[in-house]
Length: 446
Image 1: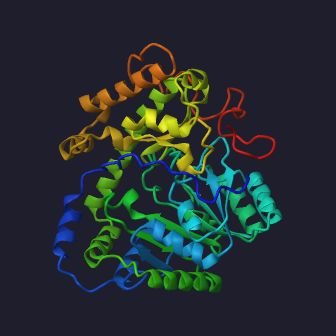
Image 2: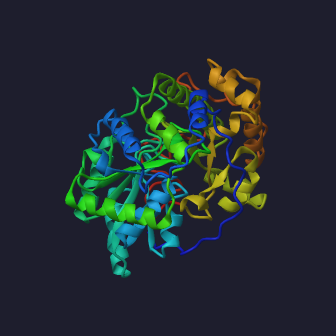
Image 3: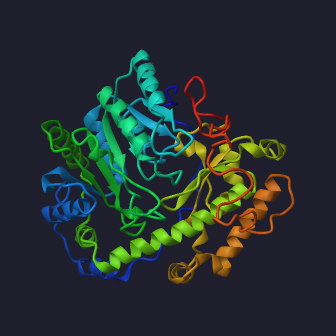
């Protein structure tokens, strides 16, 4: 729970994921609006913001248009939020890699709190209170907590009772809560996982943030929304964020705003694509989970989105023999599978943790990616099977064991992997000392 370094060393980024094919209907709307030259106002036009209201109301959050702002990317909105609130920023460890850089650009202190063993996205509530206390002891004033109810990098959704405890702790400390809900529509099994927004529990203290590229738009079309509380304090925050966006002069491009407005209406073809993406990502991340745990890694079972977070601490001895002692080296060793080391997610760089994503299994060209979308079972496709098999063999080699027979090895009847454990929780229900549990001083395990 120590204050993080002001600007950690960053390695060159791995190649970005290619993402799913662009939905033809959205491509047609973008092309039809290509001659629009009128710029969008800062925060988005009224038609776009009105469409966003319908988007949120379908998710149980009544939202007038004057409580919505839009921007070309979630990082731009987060930067404006940090600028408007001042004070220190509280993040989880691990957290999405775009949470911390805007705060450091503004010179704000960043304090991280470990997540519990059950799921990522939210801090342990008691560790959060201790983080706030220590931050104040160091002369910082925490103002804002960023959390996620459908988490990147872990691919998990926290249980409602944990969310309630964190919201109570945040309210007790007078914190603004920014709830990143970008991946909430990518639940692998909507009947198995309950996703609640903190805005339902703390309606006057929560800003909801949604990167539309996670589920609604192609990965290369930057657009994001923020929903503000319907209070005087919320209106002041919204105005300050809008003024910052105006100073940055980063409006959405007119043609893209037109397409976003259409997509937010969620016509049948858009809803079907989102549902298909959730199904495909669920199948691929479950297969990645089986492969990782079969090799001896610790990994929470994924429930949402396209990513999962693995801890290779059980393989430290054979990895050390190969000169791999931290997340930077581990990322390089697994770069072929789009691995991103834990150091990118505010995690301990000496820990052997990486994020892997399903995008790497989709295929290098649009034809293969479309085949994955169209397949009844993506795991039956040769290029998907080959990718999982190669990863299994690479992990087996890193672990000093024989090559794995394939991605299905060790899978039980329920489809979960055997071997090295699935969620950082020991058989008796406690946290692994080397996993993501909290140690006696409240620090992330390493």
